[in-house]
Image: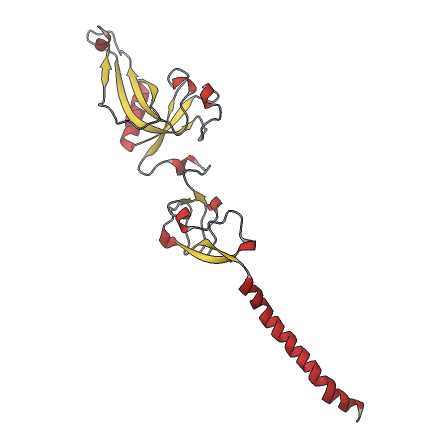
Length: 239
């Protein structure tokens, strides 16, 4: 038998078989690897979500993702994302990362810490009017407005008014977290308190700040009911 015939009838089928085996392996092997690859559910955006948007369940979905390639900070529970506010826009299908979200525990701009329906307002304080530096972010305070006597006419009196009660402190100076040395009454940067108040109370505080001196009163850590609004005049100081 000629050499060409030997190659045709003996080696060519073998070569074709090897080629077919290689092609099948290339098709099947990646799928076998994918079948054994461990995955974990991650939260993704179901739609485009603008920045500064509170997340709802309808905006989110769970999607399996290879565990070994999981991005750092990926959110794996929808419950952990619902109610948080986006600090950056999310594209449809984008994995939600912790860095994308803001909540009470996040160190982001003050606007994300203002409770819904309230407004942030800053009042000046010093060692005396600010409880000697012991007020910390997260504490609750009352605010007293002390109106001095405006003139020397008979009957003119000074007044002290309990202006607002039980308002949360958002920041002391520009610090939004409690200082590690809070027990020492450290006064570094202690020149203002930023409070979360109702819009109407913000107007009252702004008006009072132009006519009176303001004094913060630290409330107990345990919750207490508000008291009746009190106004004290010079006459009340006389025995």
